[in-house]
Image (cartoon, rainbow, N blue to C red; front, side, top):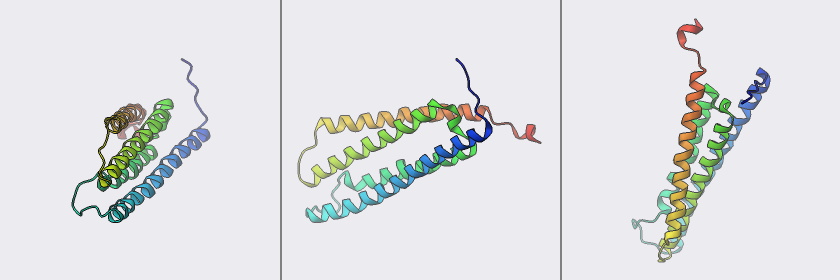
Length: 162
């Protein structure tokens, strides 16, 4: 396999693009997470759903904020520190698979929660799609750890820098 080394300036620009993607993902998940909390409160109130009764809507905003917003910020910091995106396709695959997984999982949580509030039964299809979302998140985290491992191999030990 042929390896192409980018000039340092291009590599920095490429890294900035990845940081911007991670930042934009974090902002998107912040908006979605806060919106999901607002939707939960207003939808349950509008449908006279009893306080304290469990629905997936009650935990969707937490999932979006933690898996989406907080994790995107953690990935951003690790990218900034170690340029994890130098792994090329590994990082690209991680980014898209992770985001698809989080959106699939949270989308099914919203759907399931709406059905619960409306007094309807959820289906096996919803659980299956949510399961696929969880699998995608797991695969993506494995891809990220592989990319991070590659990035850490190229980091000089402290004793060599001095």
